Amino acid sequence: MVPLRKRHLPGNPQRETDRAIHCTDRRPPGLHPLADNLPNGDRLGHATVHNREKNRDPVDPHEAAGNAILWTGRRDIALLSHKYQDAQEKLNRVAEEAEKTGLKISMTKTEVMRVNNKQHAPIQLHQENIKEVDKFVYLGSIVSKDGGTDEDIRSRINKARHAFRTLRSVWSSSALAQHNKIRIFNSNVKSVLLYGSETWRTTKTNTQKLQTFINRCLRNILNIRWPEVISNQDLWERTRQAPIDQEIKKRKWGWIGHTLRKPSSNTTRQSLEWNPQGKRKVGRPRQTWRRSTDAEARAAGMTWAELRRTSQNRVRWRSVVAALCSYRSEED
Image (cartoon, rainbow, N blue to C red; front, top):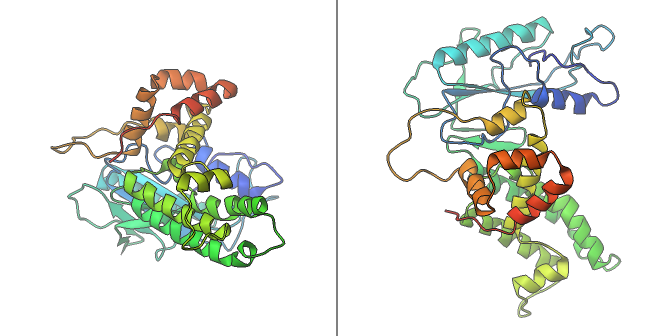
């Protein structure tokens, strides 16, 4: 909702606005829009303020300043702070900047989530207390106090199941070849299932849930019914599918390479390489996205410095991704 300092390019305002929100390198100090799951999920900080407001008065592109963004609809912003005072100040600044461009923050759609914080003073906007939650949806993914991967995977499975059922006439059609049905499954169902999977903190349990759903869908497409039996390996070979854990890992490392190629001032890259400070609780550290990613890199004999250098060459990076995906890291 804040006028980020990114020049609008004509042709696709929706795409350019989204790109500016996540990739702008000229933002007001302290206003830091974040991705869904932070790389190191031990501490999300004091509060994440979630704002969703539909803009009913888009800025006229002919009247907008040369470095302004053409806002065409609802935008989500997540603010992160370690201290209560910083969270309140950031929200006030966003509200002030939004009002300058004719935008308004919706009180009913703005939420606060606290993580590992004993401060209970309410965050306020226009002298009203903002609702506090244990989780929220940001850009289609669920963020919760423990990261949100488990909740997000359950949500993704439900959405993909609905997409699969919507196309039941396609799966039962005798006019379509099997390979065409699989292509439709990959584009219309699996893409829904794996949305945002690049930042999932995968475990054996939630990976098995994803694989079970996919196997059930594939058997339905191939019309394999009891008592007919087929092994999972044969099923994947007939449908040219890779195990879901390998596919998620490939997507993740592809996204990492894309992010590492961005300039160091880029918000997305800063979030990827960010190392939050703080005390760790007693006991075995909880498995996080960053720890599992580090383990995969070590298993392939690579450091982050080597990964940064290699990512600049797309051809070499594809080879690295193939090598990384051939190793299985220890999961919880």
